[in-house]
Length: 75
Image 1 (cartoon, rainbow, N blue to C red):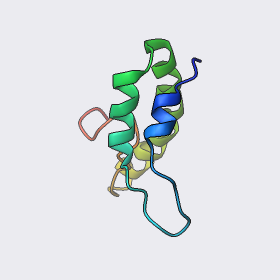
Image 2 (cartoon, helix red, strand yellow; image 1 turned 90 degrees about the horizontal axis):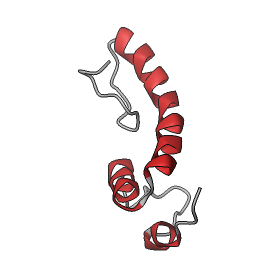
Image 3 (spheres, rainbow, N blue to C red; image 1 turned 45 degrees about the vertical axis):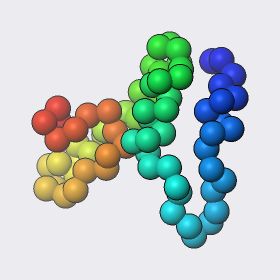
């Protein structure tokens, strides 16, 4: 995995108890715009955990977490 200094430097500081200024969707857009496809595959692998959680939520008719790879129609 390459060292993406631009992505890390462009993110605001995180504070405990304060919602982040950058949404997960904005973060993933930033990654897609600036990362190599092989590195994006690693992010997709991590996002599969949210997809598994979303499958359970889908079956329980609960709200889905937007941080997964799949949306409602794909599930």
